[in-house]
Amino acid sequence: MALFKLYLMIKVAVISYLNSLPFVYGLKQSNLFQEISLSIEYPSKIAERVIDNTADIALVPVVVLNQLKNYEIISDYCIGAESSVDSVCLYSFVPVDKIDTIYLDYQSRTSVELLKLLLKDYWKLNPKLNILDSDEDFKIKGRSAALVIGDRSFVLKGKYPYVYDLAEIWNKMTKLPFVFACWISTRKLPNRIIFEFNEALKNGVANISQAIQSEALQDNQINYEDYLNKKISYTYDDMKKRAMKMFLERINSKFI
Image 1 (cartoon, one colour):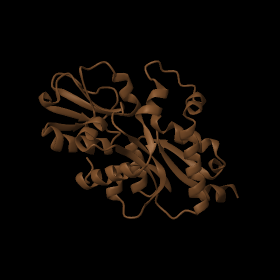
Image 2 (cartoon, rainbow, N blue to C red):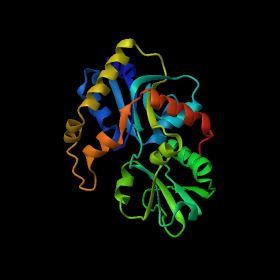
Image 3 (cartoon, rainbow, N blue to C red):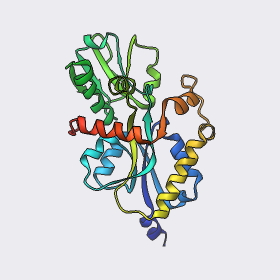
């Protein structure tokens, strides 16, 4: 019976960054938590799971949508930003027009595609692009810069004279917000599940302070309340839908 129950559990994949904390908190507080198997992984791993069809519901990097044939956006919540986001940035010792090489975060797909788009359409630049293969050396020196995303970006704050927030630059270029990840399902789910899932997300977003307290977060370098309440925008509204559609239409859908 236990094995049968495990087989029927809904496989939910969530991004392993601080910005998804309200979602995880809401799910853990809900009755639905007894019916799901929750995995928490960095964005490019989530993308692989969705493409391999090993997740039923996923907070998926939006660039993956260009690779999928069958999916449904199931929530009015997302990981987005109205302007600056603070955790998806290009770090450099020199101005962007002096950069000759950019090292790209291996944990990212959407942010990498966003950077490529901004380089082409906003800055009109064509530096060499290389993938970082670890977190230990971001290779930021001389005219080499790095795109770093997620929680690891917080430790770089104040260390480099030039920091380009990609969501802020996108906003300058388009006058629109940006969507980094949205909730999708890869198979048809009962309406009850979808309803309870969204109620759990709603509860988490409405209780960010409690979510922070639940994890006893104490890194003095991070203003958790400011980041989650002011930098991350969780509502998947009409402006974000428009922005996401524009982004997906403009990028090259091939992953690095």
